[in-house]
Image (cartoon, rainbow, N blue to C red; front, side, top):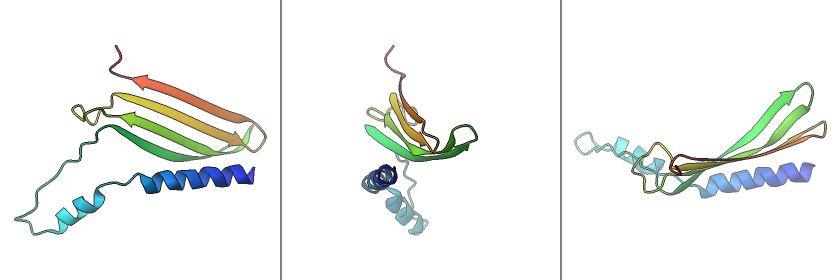
Length: 111
């Protein structure tokens, strides 16, 4: 059980480290003199991911731990911040023995 928790934590950390962002460029633009500051809007394109840890407590099931991974497809970015499709995956475990696995798919451009 401890090995599974360790593997999931390492996977989440690896995903966060590999999913870089452009905050450094925006912060550098904010430090520039006001005459040269151009406000850039970040438009996401393609697939982006949003991992989250799961930690909760339920009196009937016990302590809950796990991970959530959301994959967003923004396509070419023309309708950002709205997404074209989203995949939601969750794997949670409880200390009293039960498990929860969820997979959801949402597509706003299918129909």
